[in-house]
Image (cartoon, rainbow, N blue to C red):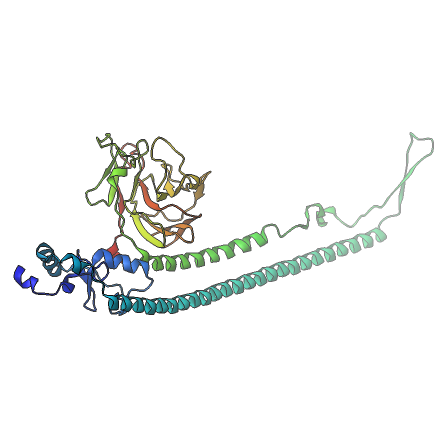
Length: 438
């Protein structure tokens, strides 16, 4: 078989992206093959999924599975690969370089057209959303004014009825007063100048028939809280719209999914990193690990091997039923020795759950985050250029919190599984995103 492989041109065993022999090759629907990691990195840099070779677009995400036959053949070719003479290795195919650059020009132009379409869609979507909100606010305000005016009319009718009732009683009292007995004069016997007190005696009107007007009042400030309640209802509608947009937002970030693997050399000695580098848990015993300048020595943290210094990246972490954890991104140059404050000023942009059940953004001071649903899986989206680190509930798509800052250093995904709390928090944090989810 080795002799047969040796008869084939080397180009059949080369990935056109890295120009090296295939490593874990995948074959996409158009028939072209690439290294799995090369294709995933390529797609992570582009907003559209198309073949890097023939430019065929894919509406649905292709299922990337390793082509084991091609992988075996490539491995055999690597072992029997003929050595090129030094002079041959220095030969540069100028025509190929020209063609590559011409293709790059076409891809850039094509990407620009797609980008223009994206800008236009976003403008139209924003116009649609804001117009709907403005209309809803105007409708809500009109309803509020109408309700206030109706209440005002009701009160006017009530006061008018009360005034009429009072006038009627006054009329009756005057009538009875006119028909009553003659006036009686009462002389005071302790004064030099006698005083006369005139009393009208009403014989036919009973006091029990008169209304006790001391209990009748009119509220002079009836609209306390009316506008606030209407605005609160409007805010609920806006919140529902924000959640809808958030779900769409999360769906769009999936194309920036990156492969994240934990770095054991950064893990605190109380942490156990799984063999596949996707899980980390807290242990009761201190592990014997070699000293390393990148290792956290006192705080139970661990970083991912990958670091990002540009573009957009998305990954998900399963937290399950854990009662304490922290995750996010950190600066590559953060302090990893001794104790330190976890906050943006020190290079940490992280979200956490405290043992008491409170979610917090680790600002300084911390910012409490209210969540209606307890997330079991969180999505982390890093937009390096825009300086944003956003957290989402991966199950519902609801946006949780966004840090806004400016980045100059490379950033690493960061995880801390929290303390054990008597074994109640022993479950691991699990990175559940990979290149294959693109």
